[in-house]
Length: 326
Image (tube, rainbow, N blue to C red; front, side, top):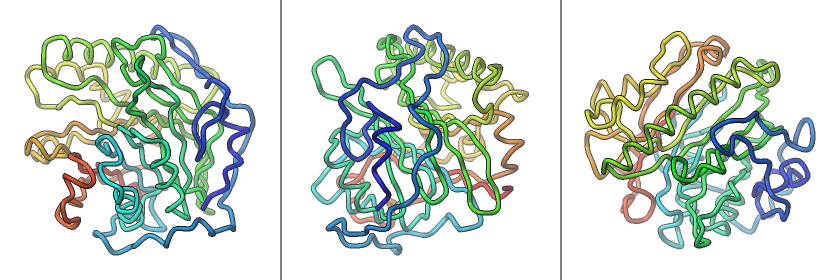
């Protein structure tokens, strides 16, 4: 598995195990600048493969990634883990899909997340330290291929705005290097308020406005890359009359590319409980698009390959972006 010495770099954000120092927090009321980690650079993959777990399977579902592409995904893992075997199955799926960077949502057990990361010899993970007021949580985080991606700065944003952001977005700055291409970008993992009642729709409305204003401030700022990808469970359809207008802040084509728009236009679904719902999305800034070139967005039908997927893994399929223009 990958080295865990990121504890010194990302103090307060779970990296395999918890760190006792509070995380950097920014934008408590929807304003503020990005926090910085405690160091430059990061770690590669460790040589020690003695995790106690068998190697993950690479044949559980069709491969979509490759060594010549940069492969990103958002995956709501539904109160992870659903069963004692969920971590092993998710590790198999990530390996089979051959993904480089995955935003995960609804992580409900840190030990199970640690097990998942330990089962992935080519990946490492970072996990939010946020929890609800009652001590429970559905954390967001990232799993990344550590031979290609190095995190430098980590922050939780909008930590003081729990009404509009019940799960604070997690922001990580990554350095990508595949040996031939290298660039820096920022990834922001989100999990917006769920449900369709008027209050939930309004809370997402405010979250969209505040998040876009924050991302815009990063793009216009003097520090950090303006290549930004926002991904995760937005709990909002692009074609839904009650909430589609919530997307308006990110529909400025001069500033953003909603990578999941073609999937919505085709009527595809990431949320299995509703055959016409894409709730999980990937949005990139124009600067990110200019850096990486065109890509393909798709929803792998992993539920057709994994028996009892909805009960044992999730009620969401992953949404993936395959970038070929590096």
